[in-house]
Length: 231
Image 1 (cartoon, one colour):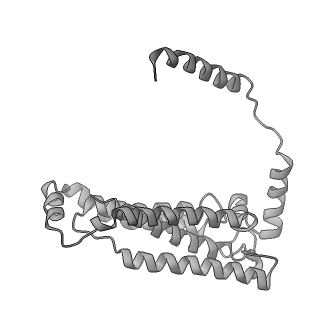
Image 2 (cartoon, one colour):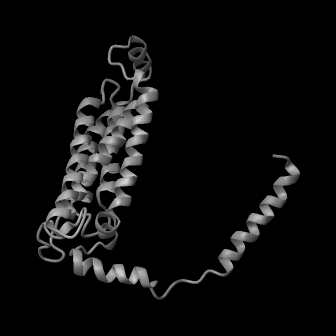
Image 3 (cartoon, helix red, strand yellow):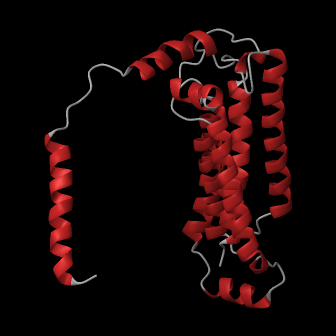
């Protein structure tokens, strides 16, 4: 881009963002749609976390679409870089052994991986009670694979096992969705199971199960992407 065109562009952007900042005012009242969700989710779904209730019930098709996009990304990365994942490649062994990770990194990973995995499980199973859920917990779980890849050159991502787990989790999500059509009010309706006591760990119907399966699917897909990008 010519330098003479940069200055007008910066001025225009400054005017736009300046007007947004000047005219900004904090909302004191929820919009009607948001207010309806805030009232409906605890009453109808039994979930204190309104966002999780929306994503795994009212807008569950959107969530499935996002997971499908992530699956296509993982499949595309595997198609492009799958040939690089070889366990008997002497060049790769020599390259990774040239600069081995330090003892601090290796032992730090041994300590952190179980803690991160435990934290990921906490995020997933408490997604209907507070901040968290399947997507967030799955991303945190995939960071365990990232730590192992960085700290242990000899570690190999088990793509076959991850693919089986990802497929099984996706199948279970679809089966829960169909069960919602048969036994409740629609696809992925969480009321196929009892809502339980509001705010308890085992409550909100099938939302905790959906969150677990979603976390497993997202975690496996992100782990495959990390493994394929390994140098």
